[in-house]
Image (tube, rainbow, N blue to C red; front, side):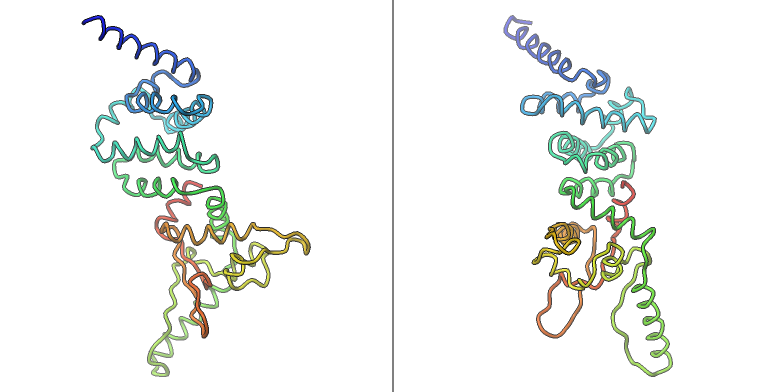
Length: 273
């Protein structure tokens, strides 16, 4: 080895030693996995070492919680196809450098699922969705999850009765057709039920929340539901929710929703909350 090459190797080793010193609580075995080593050397240059250390610890803890040996990580990563390798690498990079604190815990779980599951196509989709989520999106999905398991589905029950009657009328010849009305069990949430459960009164049109501030306790103007209404629209665009809007005379808006469905992607996301 000539002197120039020797100096280059020595410089790289010193940089690696300095980096590991800055990330003192990160297990050297975890940091030594080639994919992680590459990301550390890339991110440490332009990111706060303390915050990077915190995210790596979160990921490491989640791996250990699943009883996955750190020593097995290199083999698991070596066995990934090229596409899967870059999905994993890009998501860990995003997790360490860009994801919001409210999203990080959920994101770490999904990343580890992607790593340890052989059939991980859905995890790839959820990771991509989480890259684009903020705290309001997560807050909304927590409200959705709470409603699914403990909310009152009064409008849904009334709609089910109408559907049954329409079918009976068609079978008896009273009617020739029935209006489109789709309900996917507990994963269909009617707007009126959702508002009632969250103590929002007299707001049947979501566009009012996007264009007007709501009164809180009769005095304070708040934007909270403007943020959450925007989250509904955003998560619809991400395929997490599917919106069904009211078709009325006059002008129509796709945000004047009657109900929304939690899609297969949304249901998977709920598993991480």
